[in-house]
Amino acid sequence: MPRHIGIEDARAIVRSRHQVLDVDGSTAALRSALADGSLVRLHRDAYAFSDELADLWADGRHLVRLVAAHRQMTGASAVFSHRSAAVLHGLARPDQVDWPVETTTMAGMRMSGRPGLRRHADRLSDEDVVEIGGIRCTSVDRTVFDVARTCSIEAGVSCADAASRREVMNGRAYSRDAQERWRDRLLERAAASPGRRGIARARRVVSFADGRAELPGESLSRLQLARLGFRQFELQVRVEGPNGRDYFVDIALPDHQTFWEFDGEVKYTDEGMRNGRALSQVLLEEKRREDWIRGVTQWRVTRGGWRDIATPDALRSRLQAFGVHVPPVGALHARQIT
Image (tube, rainbow, N blue to C red; front, side, top):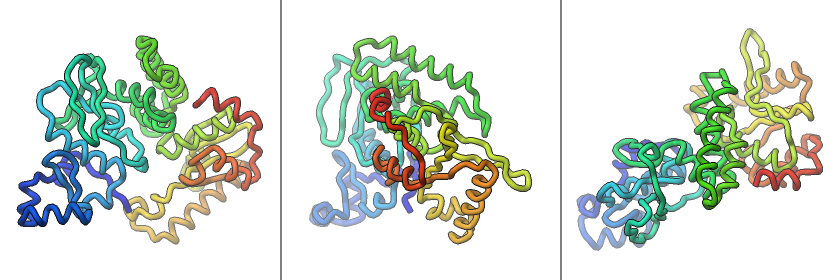
């Protein structure tokens, strides 16, 4: 099961040439390890052993490369930004494929190229720069803005949902006013940057963002549902359960009396999330929960995992397998989202 790591964990994985030689003993052994893939060169004078990277989520592998790049940086001109800043802030989807380390350097300053490093030239205000674990990066708001306008809609919505969640949720309590304040603040940032690359996309992402989404899979589910033409969503819907216990369902589609649940494998395969319960017990409890929700609400309960939300067509097929009528106007609505 992939694991998450923090900055100090990443620093422990990154080794200099001297440290690698202390382990393998010779330059020939280092070259051999690089050739057979047991050692990976991250940046100049920065290496990692493959077995220490193998069990990490993609965001963890990126954090290791980011730390390696940070070791080579001098001065205060460059700031980690875009998807790299999203990793530092814990806003990146952990399942995404690897991407280059990204920095922003003040416009007009000299930038040298380097494999595995993507440099952006831009202006950053003092409020746009923060420090996390001794590493300078763009602020949460600036990071959401940059990811929303330069990356995929999927990455943008997931990042924006996660960022807004920190301001609009207090436990299970959702503040619609806080959501609107967050949205207005980000839209004001977009309005102050007319003509920049991806501004129209950033506006769409920010307008669509909803901090009630708990996981990236829920964010992507909602995006694909919107692309299919569904208009009305309710997130984390409360259903009164047995013995005073409440159940919460990921997404409700009121017009269709249908619930959608993102069913990631991690809650079944991760022993920590199972809290000591056997897999059979987890499955039985999940079935009883679903039966209760269906019985109390008389609504259809549909569910799926990453493969089922990979594309709008995949989700359409999944919903139709449950007997859900998919709106015929999805293509028109999709142009408003993508």
